[in-house]
Length: 145
Image (cartoon, rainbow, N blue to C red; front, side):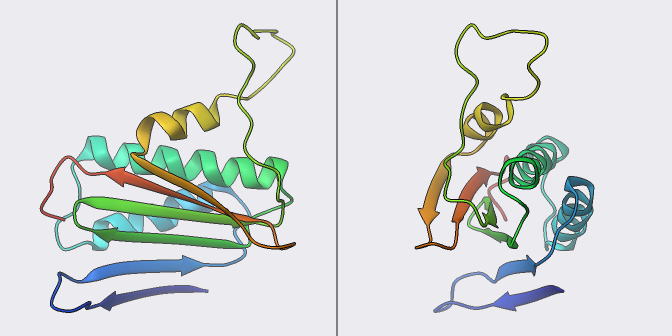
């Protein structure tokens, strides 16, 4: 189920939020994200949009690959930042590839460092026996959003 709604908080600019449950691919998450970004009153510049899409892709791919799926997916925009939240049923924290580990047989391990590089604000909230929520805030180049 997809929802788009505008909220007002004590006279501040509207906050726009999308929530989707039951994502089955990172491609699906990217399509939702593109639609979300283009629905903003001032869509972000291309470079910022690509950063948001990459963070979404990496977080959703990690949840699908390592945590048995995505249980919640949310996007928000306010005050020059797009927020991405991905919840999954695993309480395992994201892991980085060990430094110097470039074994060609090994695949992956680069997504979490990419997310950490692109997002200015990252939190991981464990949900007592119900997995975790990863929240990432990606600053936009155009602070008008």
